[in-house]
Length: 207
Image (spheres, rainbow, N blue to C red):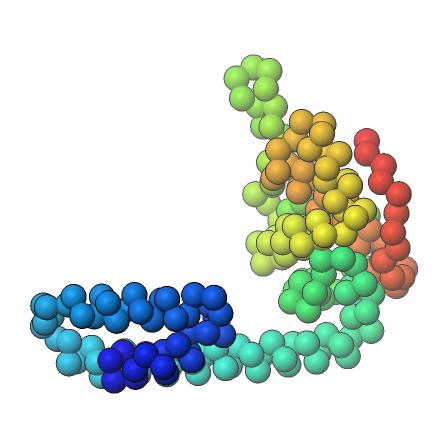
């Protein structure tokens, strides 16, 4: 870090932490000034760390290329615009849905799709009278994460947020309310895939 110098470190850190770059660099050099112990193997580490950093940078570059390729493939798919018209469904989520679900034609009902994605809530009792809804441990493990993350992102959508807020008002905690929202969105997604129609805002109806 001393060889790189303060100015270079600030330049490297500023894109990641615009407001903190200079202060962080000063703290780094203050710590370096206080260092009095030479750790055995430090010269070897000085050779290894740059190599590992270069390898990590190469992996990140590969991820960027792969993400770009996935986006291209998704755009070419006939259901691409249908999927991404739903709030909270981006390139990665849309690609995961297409890979695992396709056009959804193998599922007779929305309930079957929800069960496959692990969105059917599991009701468990605590003691003799307290019941809790939890995400099911069943379903496609590769797909399961996508609908929850998608539902969380969709909280910026007024309709989705209103549904979530009403579930919270009914006494459900965050995870339960998010599960309800994800389950409701699975019904909408099923209809979109079945009919090839774009997402349409629906009035909030809580049952």
